[in-house]
Amino acid sequence: MFMLEIVPVLDLMNSVAVSGKSGNRETYTPLQTIYASSANPLEIAKSLKLANAKEMYIADLDFIERNGKHNIFEVKEVNTILPVILDVGVDNLKTFEFLLEFAYKIIVATETLESIEELEKIFEKYPKERIVVSVDVKDNELYSKNMDINLEEFKDILAKINPNEIILLDISSVGTGAGYNKELLDKFADFKDKIIIGGGITKDEIEELNTLGIKKALVGTALHKGEIQINQF
Image (cartoon, rainbow, N blue to C red):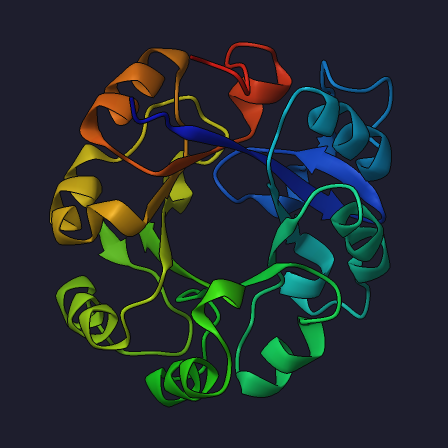
């Protein structure tokens, strides 16, 4: 039987794990999690490994904001405990290359990507096993700070480059427990065997996602509260 893999999510700021809602990063506070007595990412990672997590997703919010700070050395340490899927807001090939020594897989997200050309350069130069494309959506439209492109056009590009893994992330749902974006998942039905779904996933939806044959689910808030288990099945 197919089993959906639960991928724990950690957001890092100022060297600690933090939590917040809907991407409003200025309101984030230190994470309270059942997996550790503090918001120390190493302590949390060790506990998640004991709970049979296979890998974890980390967003370095300081690096993403380009505020002169970063948490990549903490990420590198976590990566020795659990393989890290890292999001730092990759904008181009140069940033992607720099990050390869810090994490197992690097996310290339539509929110921060400079251009489709940079995405193509990354796929031409590096193995697909190291690359995860994140389709960031806000209000059911492709979210990108630099590219003038819609969801359908980006789907065509994904069909050409054929990544191993594609994150579908509804930014408006992050941390809300409002449920994953079913409309978005339907639109990407052709990529079902590659999908990692994220954003507001609830306990009741885990079985549904498993039945649909979705590969992996990014779970933050519900996991850290104990509402969803890593070994859910």
